Image 1 (cartoon, rainbow, N blue to C red):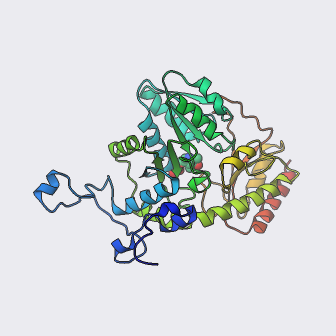
Image 2 (image 1 turned 90 degrees about the vertical axis):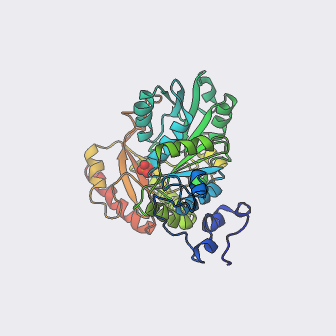
Length: 395
Ligand SMILES: *Cc1c(COP(=O)(O)O)cnc(C)c1O
């Protein structure tokens, strides 16, 4: 390969873009990667330059070559007009919301949204005069009937956090746009590799890069990408909050980006294999995974997504809580922890009942969320097999 990047990356497929986007070896003395630029002060050569803010960079919070390398690459991947990179997935969500709403506005949010999103809406947004109403994740085009005169934005997430309901994003997009609203999506589960958000009608898409972009469980970062109509507001909000991520974290995210397609394919393949294995277990009532033909969201997933990631849910047949504890305690390979998207397998118990407001969460038994990592699935099955034996013994 030459020292210069491909001239028109848009003509390449996503996996190729991941490898080449956002880097220009000719600008780095031939080195493959953009280095970590640390900096607050940016020097101007002359009086005229500083008075007129001439120069590509002005101040550390607003941009560096390292930051541009990631935001350019992400915009290319997501099909966005622009992207900002923030210190966490949650902060990327708050930038999207603050860019879209004013005092007196009304916001619709899926009842299946990531819980800290709800906490932000009910706390900060409410304090600043924005009212939030939660809606059935399966609402589809019916969202039109829930929009008020002052409904300015709708937030979707597919599949839902913990509960994995699939949302009909194109149908919701059409209804929201017919009324002049803004559609925001938390696209963390699929990433733009499996669901190109802006192509499917999303105005502002959020990715917790903490998950699959990192892939290492050692990084917190967020991305907010937007189409041409909404990017100026996103960029302004990012600048006003100075919501910039640290340069080392951006560098780690760039490193994760180059292998994300490969990792995601394996998480998806292994995840589906484990989901099928769990589905066949006598202790399991239902597996919540849109990639399974039996899942109620399967048709939409098949139509709109090009694959699955490694995160899904499992509903167990009713057993005492102590039996679930006996299963999860002493697992050798599966860790218990809240984040996901790294190379290692995880499991957590969850219950959406206490905070749902638009829909009743009644899955019929204790629920677990699995993240399938890059271990050999035969080892993972053996670990869970022993766990199920403990569960049965304690039932
Ligand atoms: C983890 C997560 C976030 C938040 O990301 P952080 O970097 O942990 O703040 C947002 N949305 C979804 C769906 C997530 O899973």
